[in-house]
Image (cartoon, rainbow, N blue to C red; front, side, top):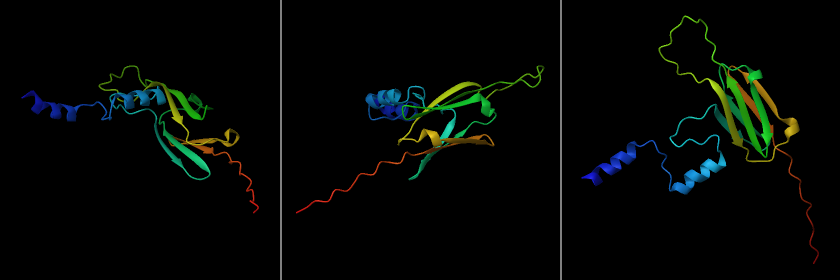
Length: 148
């Protein structure tokens, strides 16, 4: 009887469906600050795209002042950190529910290519932070002719 229930329990579980425990451990070591065993969404949400010339990262951070956000590049990883402060408009308000996230955040994003750090730019508009990370020009090798 218990065997009949086991697949149903597994399907409803929030634990990620990995091939084995080593995948879970590796994902933790790859991004320790973004690791979430139960699939909670990471904050801030990001979209990452790439073309031949650059990598673009768009992060949704509504309600945050751009001066409360810090961007750095360390070891070919983009680090996005900041703080969203809770500002109570009127002290007499009694909240029934608070679902908006508040507090500090720290997000690391591994970059798939070498970046020219001197040309990185970031713009903040309508709650979306767009970061453009130009790729380094790869040194082109010299073709060596073969004599016969």
